[in-house]
Picture (spheres, rainbow, N blue to C red):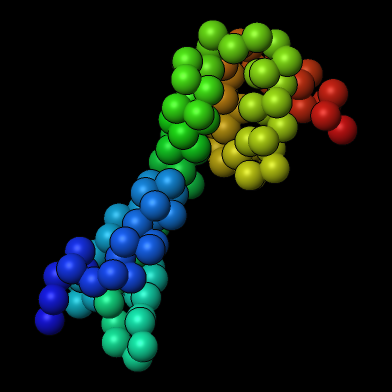
Length: 120
């Protein structure tokens, strides 16, 4: 069998896997909680999904890259937009999500809750 990295399907899904903070494995390395992906009837790769808290860290890092500065350096309006985006992506269903986001934004939990209330 070829390594997963040698298959063209891997190139197609790798950006998504990286954005999620997941890991690509060979299909035979897959555990019960991993997702095996097939191409034309052949198991090509397995994806090990991250823990939800790790996903939040990846989302925050991606948003920071997108903005080009640490999230704590954004103005209030941009921070409110970040909070709305994170809420839509389920960031606040993760345990300590508000605290994690507040830390990344350089604001208090109270401020994050205010941003959430304003978006409703």
